[in-house]
Amino acid sequence: MMKYLQKLGKSLMLPVACLPICGILMGIGYALCPATMQGGEMNGFLNMLGFFLVKAGGALIDNMALLFVIGVGVGMSDDHDGTAGLAAFASWLMITNLLATGTVTTLMPSVAESVNKTLAFDKIANPFIGILAGIIGASCYNKFKGTKLPDWLSFFSGKRCVTIISGVVSIVVAAILLFVWPIVFGALIAIGESIVGMGAVGAGIYAFLNRLLIPTGLHHALNNVFWFDTIGLGDLSHFWAGETSADVTWSLGMYMSGFFPCMMFGIPGAALAMIHTAKEGKKKVAIGLVASAAICAFVCGVTEPFEFGFMFLAPALYLIYALLYGIFTVIVTLIGFRAGFSFSAGATDLVFSASLPAAQNTWMILPLGAAAFAVFYVVFRFAIVKFDLKTPGREDDDVEAEKKAVLSNSDYTEVASIILEGLGGKGNIKTLDNCITRLRLEIKDYTLVDEKKIKSAGVAGVMRPGKNSVQVIVGTKVQFVADEMKKML
Image (cartoon, rainbow, N blue to C red):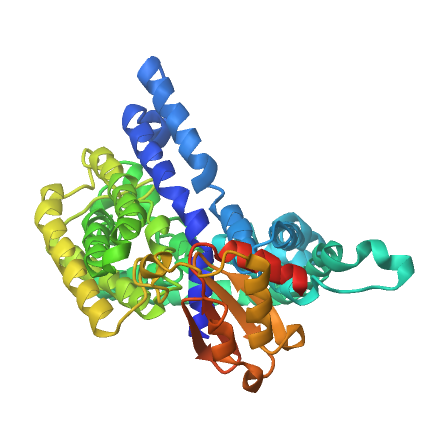
């Protein structure tokens, strides 16, 4: 299970890499054009430029789920084939259309009578469904890419049938979600309602659950309880309406304020811990991913590039991450720091919200931010090192060392033939894939593997991570060997 999650995490790296620059563009855009966030007229070149940048960044941020569909579909497939991405996209379209509010209320008119159920299906196009569609597309590709049909259906044999099967599977999944999704969504709303009266502790529990549910998209259920007027609360809407705590029955802003130190300073602290604990040969890779994500979080509060970068690689660390949000929210609520956001808890929203009547002690972001940076850094560094967590830059593949491996035979066909023979022949191969330096194979019978024979091909080494798994370290020429072996298979 853990290996599957780590493979899923790696498949998310490509779409996640697209997001930080978009978040930064949106932060700059909001700074140049406050009307984009606060409303009002847009006049002058800077306003227009800001609006343009917000829309440019939003093009990907607002469609993050679609990026996950393609990224997971291609990344989780055995040979990273685009067919899996197409199948994943077909799955996404099928599920989101079948579970769109209009479709659901037509099939089940009673849904329209429930605000919570309607809200659940309004939020169906989320990253969780994107990842699910990606997994469906990749799984169907891996299972059915070699399917042979009767002659009269031969046109649909092989890869052409993958998208069709993916669509059929998606219909079944949508039928299940039709009943399950509103129940889970409604349960979370009920949980939210139950912790409203718990003061600072309730705010902390909410913040913890908010982060914990990010991967599933179900955090929207809680957000609508606390930020909007679902049950008459509306922390966000009342804050930006210019009201104060005297106008409501709770301390206005308490369900938003705790996110600011965590997103603006805690994430950069955690990112620095990841960089410091990355393997020597992979520090630049880690910097490229998490540093840009940290800047994105600080400027405009877009945290997904950071969170999706490690939540599946190290789920236990993500649980700790969510817990830190809960703890800081309790502290922030008790000491009286109040700020609000209309987009997210980044520096841009902090500046804009500081002038609103409900804002209090916004100067405290400095000591709170310093504390968040230090705590996130220490906790992340300790957990990563103590439990050897596979955060960006700490993956098992020692790629930098293996890049130096030199294949002793430049006849790739011969090398592939010898390796295949050492693996027990093509009849013993279930799947073949490769990374930057290794052949990755799933085999049927491990007793047929002859490591000496494989090494006689001039490869750098052979690894057996599992009973039915074999990895052959070839070096940077691995793609050529893999191509020849695929022909033989």
